[in-house]
Image (tube, rainbow, N blue to C red):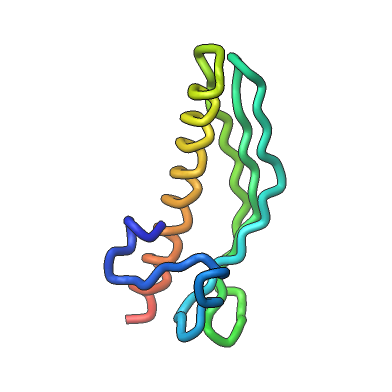
Length: 102
């Protein structure tokens, strides 16, 4: 999401706890499954909260990516695609909130 929001300061919670952030995005990974040479599934619940902790947006995300070949590399690639799709969804939601605030 950080690449999609270039003007934003984006950090993992462990980096500095989001101190001074306008928005926080808690993400609960509900499912992160791999079926070699078949598919991966990423399911997450996430929300956007303001600095006061109020929930501004809430969503559930499910992405299934096909894995066309055996081995670890195709699984990793499929998981990376799913995580990128999740990041994109979050970035769009945050951008929408920022634009609405202006």
